[in-house]
Length: 279
Image (cartoon, rainbow, N blue to C red; front, side, top):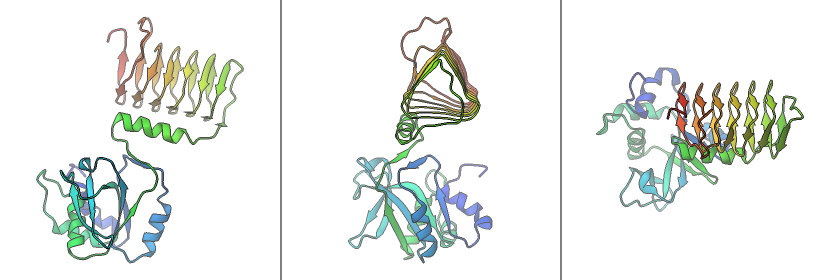
């Protein structure tokens, strides 16, 4: 899409690529504990026109909600209802057959000027197409904001098992479950799992963990990092305690000579450079 004109618009312009094939629309911010393999495989074999994934939520007012009839079928979709009749939220995974192409052509732009996928699904419901749903049993997290992303990081790291693809030196203390890629150098440091360390990472005189994910080719020196996500090629130096933080790609944080003893919590986009001494 050259402009953000809605999810249904994305389907519209992809029709020539999708053809008559069934497909999955997966909104990339969503993470699930459940495997989607069986859901997708079963849909491929079925005559269903669409299948929606739902999750029970405590605050349905904040989501698109599916209303269910007495037979357990979806009778309607309501976006952020003030008085929700259901606690089943749409989780951002939709399975469609080619019927959806007629639906996205039949609807009009919403009040915000977008072709909404929920309007396309409602059209399919109104036209009496076969719309099924599955309710997730495990956790679901929309990682579009910092705190949910960090929670998701902790949930996933909580299931890792140790796998070391690099030789770790004698001056390093390892505790808990740790995954380290190839060509990792760790010197005079403590690693408290669960921690995942990408390939080509260098860590010197630092305390890492728990619940830290470090992307490839990051460098950390003279710092303490916990409960954080560092993406590829980021550099952290002289930070007393970096906690509950998300660093994009090629981010640089310099905390040397600041004298700061309190913790630092940040969310920084790609290629951001921060000198804590200068604020």
